[in-house]
Length: 268
Image (cartoon, rainbow, N blue to C red; front, side, top):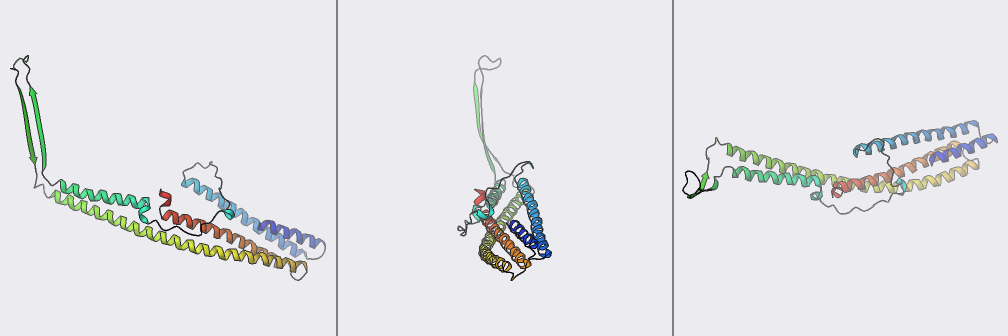
């Protein structure tokens, strides 16, 4: 949009220069402004392609996979209110750490159980057929119960229990640290989302002011009260305001996604 406006200004300056109303410098400045905006557009196109490459890398897609944008940034719906925080328990990484802590706690019980006596039952049944060469057809059976206990094994059992306890405590510490970090991440995303909304309101007001200023500048230029440079400066301010508004919308969308991610909404 900014390039189209700058080119229109350049064409107008060329026409007025042909009529002798402005100098050749005014027309040249208008062309330079349009060229500068074209250079920014090319840089933005390269950044967009880099973003697509990043998405392909994150999703492990081939470089030849086409990616189509589902929404236009200026038309994408914005969520101005955030849902209540679901808490860190909804996150898959916290759940995995909690399961690891539980497994480590069961490991303590397992280490203790290995120091206790073991009870075993056994039995056997034998039958001697009458057709056996040395058998008289009798049968016998045996039933028994055995108790095994090794109370002195070099205190290896005590060491196993201590090691299991240390692993349980380490797993609990990892879970607690992850929960604290997740809580900070949720709060940070919420605060940045609120700041992005305020920035969006400021950018919207700035765009309106720049639009009005351009209309006034063009009127002053047509009446000869202002040079073309003033119009070009105002056009540049309008272009920057449009870009700032898009950047503000982008920040709101990204911060909402970051908030949902921090709450584990994308883990379900």
